[in-house]
Length: 287
Image 1 (cartoon, rainbow, N blue to C red):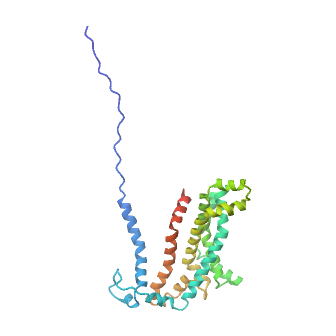
Image 2 (image 1 turned 90 degrees about the vertical axis):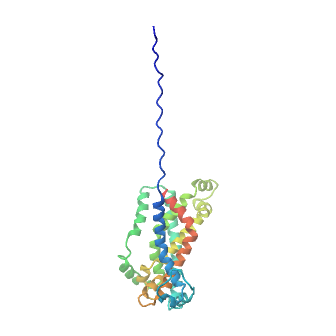
Image 3 (image 1 turned 90 degrees about the horizontal axis):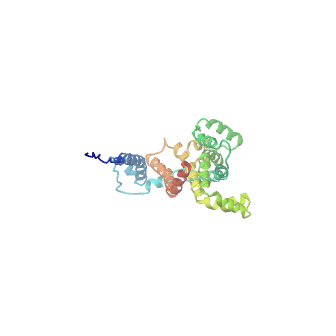
């Protein structure tokens, strides 16, 4: 009797997935480069105009690459009436704003980072939404209030408004800084006999000091660039942005270019030195 042999069944092999194609990133890079050039072009044009002789500003056609560099335009701006005094006022306002923002905002940021309470996330959002409130609406009430208090046309009045504008970012940035400080280190200081205030001053503050320094410089830059409140609340003791804005219509072309350069340079220098801290803090906030 003949035997019938059946072929051995072959087990099904798992289907091999087709290799995924790498995402095309060059359009994103091209867009990033285009946006960067779009932002850098005005800064470059203002810079070469401020570092060119006054006669070169009226030449036509203008070259994108300067053939002669000179401090004549900057000297003309710095020697104009009210520029140096307004620059000093800007420094004073920035320093007062820096101190007040850290004294008020750092404890608030520490509380947000260390204590869990009901409505903490809503409170953070509420702090951030205050930045969206238009200061134009408050211009007249603020002016009337400072007139009644005898603070109108003073550096301190402008610093108070700048502090109110800078507090939301100061609170959120300092909160992200204190989150990065390990809680275990603070608790170890408490077990070794430190009071909560002593642990904060001796342990937390030294670890958070680089980030707090970056936050303070960022606050100074915000105060340096603010122009609306300084224009509304001052007549004689103007800050540098308010001085440039008030004399913009009657000023010659070299004054405008040099004024724009003087307002841009401090911000760029400060941001360049603290960029690493700002990147780290942004990552900690969004994490």
